[in-house]
Length: 101
Image 1: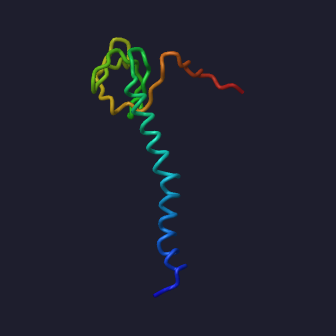
Image 2: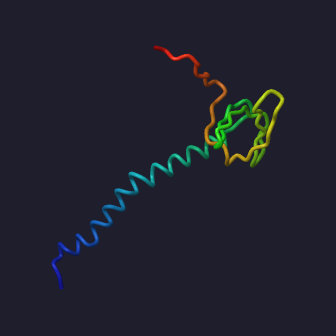
Image 3: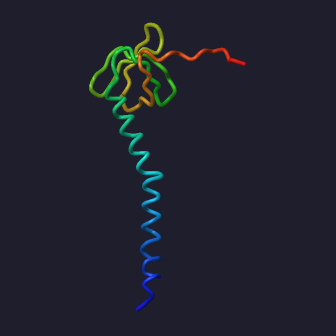
């Protein structure tokens, strides 16, 4: 029928590209997603979180699918856990406002 090398090229090249694509794109994204889900599941009272909208607040109440977030003194809002993009632990130091030159 045809040359066996052409059959290998016909099947092997797309297969090789898919394997390369998997290890460079899909697998790291899945690992980041698992790490993010674990950090959201481990949220506790007193943690500082950043929402996907950029709002930063302190967790005052944790429920199954929602958290109570204090965004200003005396202002508490209820937020879905899925909207949290970053969790900063209680012991994380705040960055300084002045630039070191």
